[in-house]
Length: 119
Image (cartoon, rainbow, N blue to C red; front, side):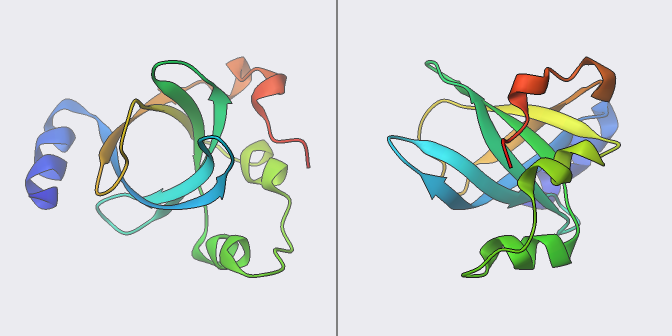
């Protein structure tokens, strides 16, 4: 099913990501990671709460994901976005288990600075 979604998204130029796991939770998901059909990881942080929460997402290197998942991360989450050439938004409106989320590209130059993580 995932492969079928991905073939269809390539035809219309969409980027899809499968929700994998929550990294930070407090009264809702604050940060999570997912992977695209090639297994490349994305890091996403909450930027706007509503009936559908909006998340800012950046593709990251596997080593960065390993650091985020460790007990003592040695990586600045802000830097994951500052150096990114491709940044996306996605929305989550309910359950996330096995969700396939559509990523919407945004221009790096139009990125509101208050959307970036503090550290």
